[in-house]
Length: 124
Image 1 (cartoon, helix red, strand yellow):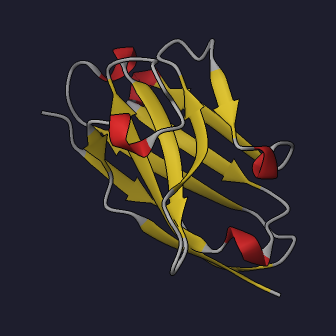
Image 2 (cartoon, one colour):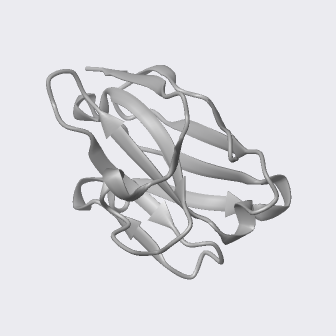
């Protein structure tokens, strides 16, 4: 069993920055692909970023490229999402997720474990 506990998030003005963290329990964290997703009110859950177990494969949705950075610290069993140049349209509940394979990293239904979610609100 893998448990994901998120921290970070909050309220920030447009152009500001936030860093989200997701700490994982379990002995197999280092072999998992990790992803970040977000869901705004009235919208479907959207892929944001993903990173493979060795950080050799990284994916971003086009709208966050150049602004967001996903990284992982396997020694601490933690994945991060550094969000810079935030925009009001980034406002959403952000979720971290984990799965055992690299297949379909942008599809939320392929992930096995999920964090509790954290609110990110960007004011204009």
